[in-house]
Amino acid sequence: MDHLRGRLQHYDWGSPTALAELRAVEPTGRPEAEVWFGAHPSSPATVDRGSGPEALDALIAADPSSHLGPAAGLRSGTLPYLVKLLAADAPLSIQAHPDRATAEAGFVAENDAGVSPDSPERTFRDAGAKPELVVAVTPFRTLCGFRPVDEAIRVSSALGLPDDLLAAVRTRGPVAWAEVVGRILAGHPDGAVEALLQRCGEGVGATGGWSGTADLVLELSGRFPGDPALALVPLLAEHHLESGEALFLGPGVLHAYLGGVAVEVMAASDNVLRGGLTGKHVDVDRLVGAIDPEAPEATVQRPGDRLHLYDVPAEEFSVWRLDGTSIDVDDRSGPDIVVCVDGSAFLSPTGTGVGLDLTPGGAAWIPHADGPYRIDAGGLAYRVTVGEPGA
Image 1 (cartoon, helix red, strand yellow):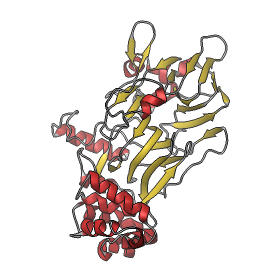
Image 2 (cartoon, helix red, strand yellow; image 1 turned 60 degrees about the vertical axis):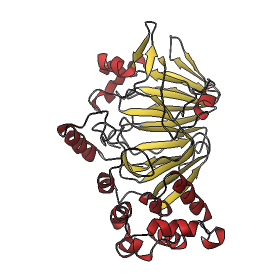
Image 3 (cartoon, helix red, strand yellow; image 1 turned 180 degrees about the vertical axis):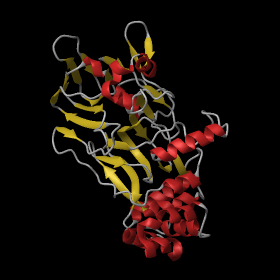
Image 4 (tube, helix red, strand yellow; image 1 turned 120 degrees about the vertical axis):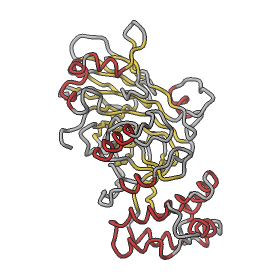
């Protein structure tokens, strides 16, 4: 087992201080959005075994069976998951992630079209799907999935959106959400955003009990004036997560993180289909095509005990939460990453060997070949490993 050095990512929506405070280091003076703990080739974490930092993707490629064990077959000899610490000081884009078939086809198409892998106009950075679990570290706000149709109709009416905006879902149900999203992002019907902003600006008495949503629309409008995606905000379910609470997001689920610090675990992909509320590349057609009208309603998962396994229907990863408790990890089917977010954690190999201390923001890489080990969490830590086959 080794200390794993994450890679800091600077995006405009990142907090200038939250990740630095969590890790007890000096801030860089730039927005600090994410720390990546994984082997994604665009930004691999590193380990130091005495001869200087070694990139985790190269380390795995040199001996995939030792590092990955049975998980070597999941993603062609690469680490199947990616772990991030995320700190949002401003809302992220309205987005979804593709399923595997969409990602594979899109990746090949962009390669064939000669779109550079690092082009800002690129949609598919790799050929992988990207299911993900977001777990709050601090209070965390997000939009995730559509509201129930009846509720979406009530909210949109209260906030001044045109009556015919949701005609398709009113008559055909959730199967028509993609059609509605496509119309909105194409700027139809005319005047929808203007009507929304006018009603939201009239105050609590005019918004029929939906003043929180109205305030969010006005906040986002200040950042992205005139963006058609503003009209999507009243249609999406709002969630306010407390520490340890989580949401699983499968492919095709429309969402936007609004603010807070979280642990985010996902299949090892960097594919994002954006629809608006961003300065980055937007691909409306592919986003609309990826929306899953049969996606189950997003359900907040709450830890029931000091040792908690989240419900993750994905074979690439599973996530355990350890809150001031210990676990003997005996039955291993792949590599583990352990991240400490509060207090301390101590990892020790079963039998002989030197253990590792983790402090907040610190992480460890435990190859499959290392065998059984123990985690003693004096504070709060997360253990990530591969998921159940066929999940």
